[in-house]
Picture: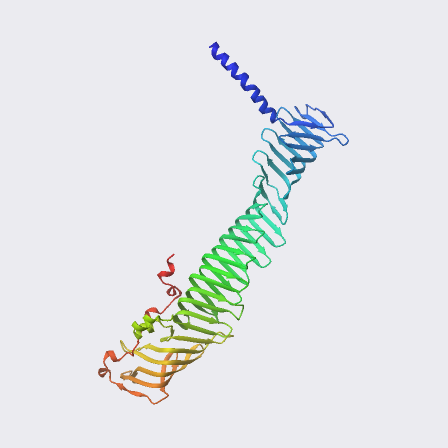
Length: 533
């Protein structure tokens, strides 16, 4: 028992000096004062330090000097409260002034109040109350704070400054005011040296030529570029750009969007959607891929154009839309498909083009297979195809004026009275005109062939099947359907009774009925390949 007691005494002797030294390192020192007094009734245990003439109170703790007019110093608690023109300095890197300060030596925590102004070489912070945690090197406030750095003014209701990282974490009504931009956010992390910000919650950036909204984002304030997510919207060059993720870079006049994107062009009354898009402001152009869909508002109607890739260029009334690969068109009065498309709003010209065949394809493809690859249009019940299709609209009214088809012209209508009959006209070149946005009249030239079912006007009984060839013919339409056919050059052919014309003679060479490709809704413009990542 005595041996154990001796060991405990020796251990205590060894520990006490170490503990005492450690504690002395943390004791607040009085470096200077004009005088001191005590008032045990009002301030029990306090040493009241005050200034006289120009001799101010100076306290010191672990590298920090605190100057004031008056200080209540509690040595036992290692605590003081300083009042009047307080100056807190920590080396050459930090200076803070305030009306009063409470300092806890054991926690190395300073609570500054009244006109607090914290200053570092790269920034300054103003607020009414500030807590400075010297152990963790953090300063935080819950009263409105104003930060000024080399280029910007930042304000928020709550904030934390991480001294080591030179980073702010702002919360509640955050504002960054800069001559080049204006930023608001629910929460924002800001790196003073890098001049970069991470935004959280409802955030908005307003520049001289753009506005960005998002729920989460990163923004380089020097370069004015960043990445934005969560309901991200970019207002840019009379366009509204949305996407699951947006990238913007002002200097390059460039923006990009990824997944569920949409680009609303208010000047051209156009909406383009897709899964990836790029916008080039200087070129006034946009490229959209993956489920790309353009919606043009024309005379209270919508023209939908879908393709693998859409490229829109040009300003208002001079806009050109190019569509590539598997183009599909839907409008109230027409449907269409082609390999590529060119639409010039300044002239009203739309071109539907086919993909050139390889030499091998030219040798092995049948005429039917070639026709199935050609551009195609459906007007009401008429199916029209050819090597190249040209539509001309009035640039002002956007209404269809004329139609041209160059090469391998094929018009097919399902005969409404027979079960398997098709009215067909084939030729080398077609010219047509529209009236009230519906086909009114067309002329077909060069090696024209026709198969047409003729009926009695009174009882709608089949008279026969007219199979004729000629150099040119004229077709008149009523309500989008063939009404009357006139041969312009002496035709050769005959009208065959139904039972006398074999079934294999009732379709022209190259016949391809493509009604299964006819889109009835916007959903039909897409296929399974559009939804594969």
